[in-house]
Length: 492
Ligand code: BES
Ligand code: MG
Ligand code: ZN
Image (tube, rainbow, N blue to C red):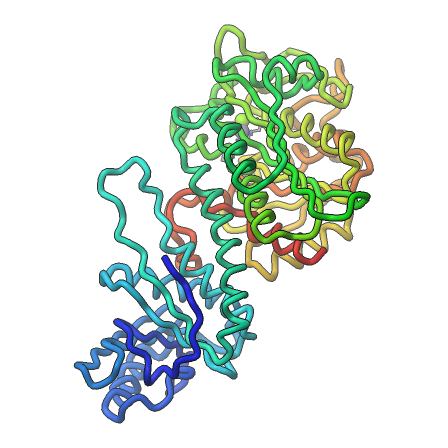
């Protein structure tokens, strides 16, 4: 799919379909201008019918009267509810419509005076298009229809081209995360993830280190080793470095949980929907997507990605409920449920990240707790942090990208809930109470005072079906967090 900016006047644009937006209860589309008397009046007629309601699309045939073969008008909803996310969503609907019509190209008008600033509008249009046309068809003979090319009609096409390229890199990072996360568990073990990271690192000139099972044991990564020991697919710790900042500039470290399949282990999960636990690697895939984009954007900062990867399986060599293990931090953990594996591998990765890099901030992504879905549903991720300044920055990026977050509290009461009689901590809290926070409390023990933010993406990492408000998240992995953290990193 090619995306380019043009300063052609809409009335002169030769295209299979010319697309413009209309606000709710407005009489005219934004920026279409005078095309032809007859066409303009039939555009007005169709707007009367759809009333510009959000996501409503109407198509007008021009019968050779204008250079454009068809005109598409898409409702943006009311002006007071308009946001970049509405534009991203509506653009996604346009792109899907154009693809279903089998057209090879479409043009979208973003006029001067559009109610959202030009750069944000262009980015939202690029993201809406690329993300909504995604489908995972690697294992299908019948591939989805080819994605149409896009021309964005703007007043200043020179600046727009640069904005387009950057938005493309961000969207491609998200798609890379999705493509990796959607891989089935028989085709994606921890060593597969390690090879994916290796080839990304050589393509994008990132530094890459992989720790094998033996190295993990020898370096005392007790959490990763314990969870990984039950599978014949051996555990890996994957590290990617982007060193484009000053030498003495402390890096931002991004950690992501990558359990390539979570059966629960000896504390086996019920069979229903267990297949979805192939998505338990989504945190790690988000980190891969971020590292890809960070290097392609050539951000002048230091960023490290750390991905602890295991398969959580029951078997003769599995770790068990009752085991006491020693984490990388030196602290011991009593295992009371082998299905609470994410916190064990993350704790090791977080402690290592802090010891090795003394980061200015450390952020982790994990499909960590079912409790997070109970609390926040499938559109909002949980945020827990020991540093309010960092939390506010991430929330700010969340507002800009519409990758939504809600902050949950953490304090000594929650820390007390994971105290064990026989070890420094236990890997579960007190029954079902505050499950997302007690999991975070376990991680807080691994980070001490380093500025840390934990993002629980159990509910947002994949969808069963695209929702009405997010056409750009089709079924499957969403790549949640890539756009969010890239925005945060770009503000540094
Ligand atoms: N990967 C799961 C969490 C999960 C469940 C994410 C469903 C998305 C959808 C995690 O490893 C897990 O099993 N957590 C347990 C923790 C509990 C045993 C304390 C959970 O949430 O039930
Ligand atoms: Mg589990
Ligand atoms: Zn898990």
